[in-house]
Amino acid sequence: MKLLRNTMAAGIAALLLGPVLTATAADVTPFQVSLPTVTGPIPSTPTDFPFGAEGFDIMPAVPKGYVVEEFFFSGTGIIYEYTPTGIQIVASCPARATQGCTNIPYTTRMVVKRPKHPHQFSGTVIIEPLNPSAGFDIAAVWDRSRDSFVRNGDIFIGWSSKSVIVNALKNWNPTRYAALNWNYLPATPGNNSGANDGITFDIAAQIGALIKDNGKNSPIHDFKVKRVFEAGFSQDGGFVFTQAQFFHALERMPKTGKGIYDGYVPMGTNGPSNVNFGLTPAGALAATDPRRTMQPREVPVMHANTETEVFLGTLTPTGLLYRRPDSDAANDRFRLWETPGGSHVSNDGNDPVGRDPVLVLQLDAAQLQKIPVANLAPNGCAHQEFVNGPAHGIPGVISPNNFPFSFTQDALFRSLVRWVEFNIPPPHVPFIDVDTTTTPRTIKRDAFGNATGGFRTPFLDVPITTYVPIDTVAHTTATSGFCILYGYNIPFDDTRLASLYSSHEDYVRRVARESFQLAHDRLWTKQDAKDAIRRARESNVLGGHHDDEHEEMDNDDDRD
Image (cartoon, rainbow, N blue to C red; front, side):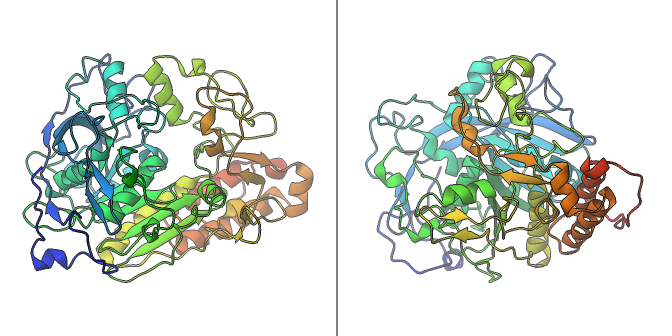
């Protein structure tokens, strides 16, 4: 990558918004990224196919009207570390960074999910650095909002964002993934498990620039791209937060020097990540660093969290520093939506009639191990049955939590498009209520044990269950460390339900009333509001389904 170490033209410098800091001499100044080279689409057959892609093996079918393709792309990147005022190229490159800290070559892969025909395309591209936390790619953003993206005609691109994943892919199918190259160095005592992972931020900028430029090398060259967003959840949500906070102002489009991404959607994260993944001590921000809170930038950031992140944030003094006021200022457009009831790992599709009972990440895990889903080892969480196969709750408990955080996420993307395209600010949402008088701090709860404040929905305002945002470990297993991220819910018994609602119809009417209002206020999409009402109708609350009729919303879709 060619770096322009001197400050670029005044027009570019003017884009560095926010508090004025006196940069250190070594701080990186804005530079134009190089576009990666692309190979593909990589041919696929029933026996040689992309990992985690729809239409193959145990994965769901390709959405109607869509095409799923895999491409490889290559370039070089640099490892950075924080300074008191910005970031710099690692000043003293450790020996364990065997390829050095600059001009590190990589070849990774992207999976492109697009409409078959350009005229069906909305103009919106969502790029996700796929979540690597479990040792395989998880498309957390796509998995929750797949139906909404398809309805809108959006393009989704997920790319493998860490060296451990490239290593896993090469082991999974050595022939298909022989060309991938991201040198993975296993962990040694006191050292990180991927000395070269710090280049992920350069790669994120390069793939964004590739799609934004949309030249002949782009895998979607025939589609008219209007806006490109970066989005992530959990570990990759932290990547996206970091990209917006530090790299957006520095890594710019070739030729024009303009910003690469038109907006950022960090979710399931409490702030920026380490920028060199433990390679040097300067890779992590100090606990008191104000940059743990999102600073101004010239494109919008819409941050969304579940109740799990708020709970985890209450446990440490710095855990809630990501919280800050909303802003509509041109150089600081920002929203934060916290959703009570939602959990970090959830089964959004596991509604009262049992639709989609298997988490996609469980399909991913089974595919990586080349075993049937029924043979997956149990997680060992206290509120899950300790049996092989998909995670299920113990008697009286639904696990994973079936609160549809996807409804929040769907509305967030629609709001972001309106904000970027039409300058229509999104609605404001209060924080989840936290009691700051306790040690540690605690989430305030209502009489049913549900969190108060935050993004209000009929799931909590017209309750039929208690939502718990975390779980504990009952059996230590290879995956039990993730139990704290699994939520569960405990349905109310008939006595409690009868004390709240006069009939099943009464319950449905109350859900419908709030669902209509959320759609009107643009906090839910119309389709998700209809789905909430359907769930209520099909529930077994006080006798279950009746053929009663309720006012319907108009048939307008949610496209912008």
